[in-house]
Image 1 (cartoon, one colour):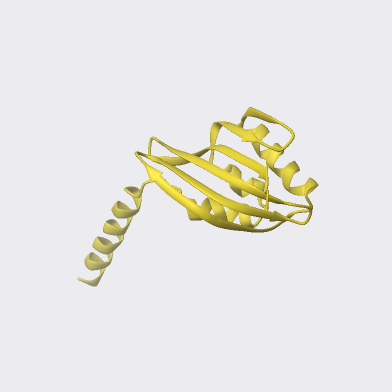
Image 2 (cartoon, rainbow, N blue to C red):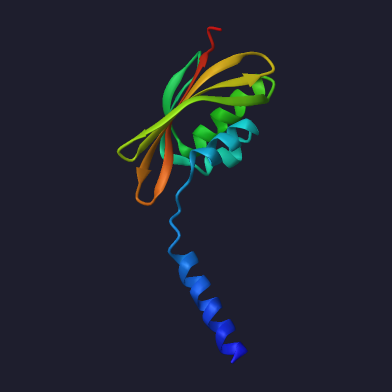
Length: 132
């Protein structure tokens, strides 16, 4: 009897886990930014990503975007913190505006995410010199 109950619980657990969507949250993405971890952040990037930096702006492949972000973090002395100021959602899209503090400068950072299939993917990153 115990083995049947155990098997039923195991089967139910597997069924519930298999229906869990691959939905990334904004919290997971901001955690990757706070850690200055471009590799972890790349998990949330769409196949093409718009990146705006103070000195250049372009659309990059996911692999190129990871390299650009890694270089940006390292040339600015590493990430010290990321503080979310505003966030919102509208029809399957999300945005977040915050302040990225690096050793060299602070940057107003804007993130745009869009629901594609069952995943919320990062499609645009903007790093602007913070006027404050």
